[in-house]
Image (cartoon, rainbow, N blue to C red; front, side, top):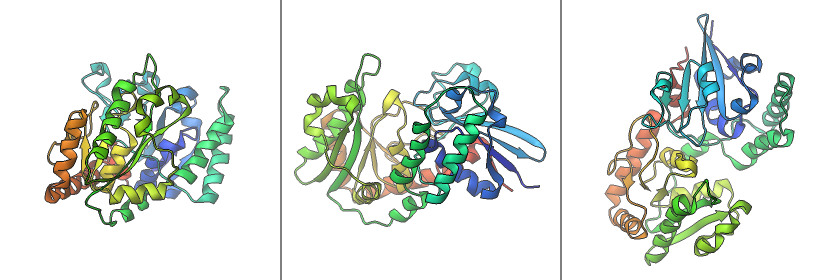
Length: 349
């Protein structure tokens, strides 16, 4: 009998879509079903912060959690429920040892469009109904359905990343688009991710031979910081297809830990695309370390150091290609939807 997979219908589909794609490839679409029954003992708040699913194989049921929480911190309720706890922001040094036995470090992922329009509407409505049936907790129907809309309208199928890798690189062109995060007394993003991203943008603009396009996109929550980064703001709207095309043309991309020092989606996208990545030090673990000079170029967060890294890569095409090719190899070994599930022990027949 083929393995059967049961997925929690209440999941945040923007984050879960990546792993649903992996489950489809591993076990077959017909063998992946949505049902709330295995997850009713869990609070809805916890369930929507991660990706709970179970695999029934050879009469044995294994419970899995994939946490896409921005923090390394363990969601205790989910940890005690599951047999395997995967995390895209695992940090074994900062996590108490009592949580190590089930913990698996995963590569970061990113949202993808996993269904066509008809199935997106179908799963949005049926999963909403299944979630409501087995919970007494209140939540926003609009936000739940809105995530399905955003998945379809704002994200692309995983195969789009595979196809886009053939786009030719322009040797002096850099495209970069990032969020300007809000800053408050708990999340001091101005001194962290915002300043670092601004230093990259300013470094690019200061190198006269570089054709730079992009900047930081402000949200309403980040208005208080706009005056500090006014020279770095970007006011155009870019479609995801355009973002992908321009990113592929760029000869280098930039990464830094994002909100709560998490691995952002863009690190995963850059690895998947096989880009030459300049990055500041990563804060959390990965399935295997990214190695400076092999599959990533590590620098400090000063404008001067970032500029030096950019110039070096621009003037050393062989090194650029080495970084990109090895980044892609890393992704194929550890990061794809299927490889992520294999790290958890999920293997189809």
